[in-house]
Length: 396
Image 1 (cartoon, rainbow, N blue to C red):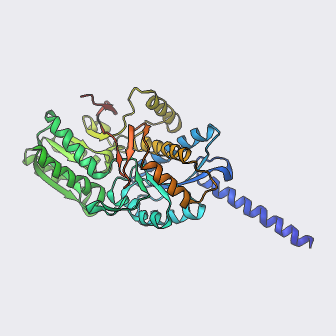
Image 2 (image 1 turned 90 degrees about the horizontal axis):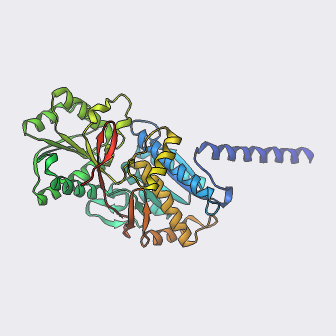
Image 3 (image 1 turned 30 degrees about the vertical axis):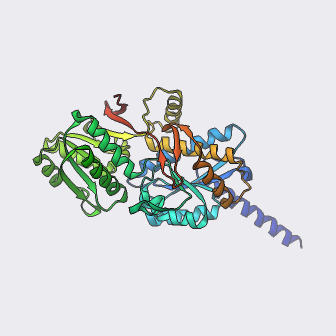
């Protein structure tokens, strides 16, 4: 009998140790054990897109730690590495669900987000993505913006909104260029979604598109053909609705050709200054639309930027700012709805969906931010330009 009791105690200790190790392995900020609401997330912590996931994870941890330090509402965060891969995101979702995720930051990037969105719907777990901008994350029918999942929300601009806002901005600032070329990735929801809306809006604004070039995963390293055709067409501005990795190659190859148009990007370009091996001087003068500029003078931005630098020894990008806002928006909604850690994910989902569809939020990436019932965010973009190796807000 004594041996059996001893074996039970050893087994209990082993289980407790395993649980502790599991929680420690998450690497995220944590609240007070069972009194903490469990927030799950996945994103690329390794691979070419790691700059996005690393920024989101760090900023989310900062927000969780700050909220927990107040002593009321408590969160704990588990952030899984999905390497910007849809299949790995599905696997990560399973890990998070088994962990007991009650709320989620969904995924960092769009394709993984589109892959797991139906799973969040089926399991009725509330999710708000910091930076997954594809309509496929919030709609079952993204081509027609129809049949919203209902519990999937976005903190970042949707792809169509980025395309429309970019065309509007260029039409209002003809000094940047009047003969526009576009280079986009045709097998990526993010890139093609922005491109389609940009082209449509450009037509209504009288923008002259002189060349359209595409690429996919099979030919994403040599852009000399597209650049030569843009140059021959007389393009003095190239719109790049793409991520920073191919954009860095385009800037490098354009420089080697002696071709120097204005380059204008969207939020996927944010991160190009931290890309290993890239000559950041080639990004001087690049414009992009973003909801966040680290050089803003308001106290919230200054404090966030200083704390992020202290944590990461780096300047925060808009992905970090969006993640920080996500956690604080979840906190605001939880407090308003009376959400507690002992509630089921399903009950929490109902409460947060109602709150997000009706509340107004003020954060780093916008004031008076609201959401539609479909999960789309409404806030105003800001233009920044890269000067002396940093993003500088553009004042009209």
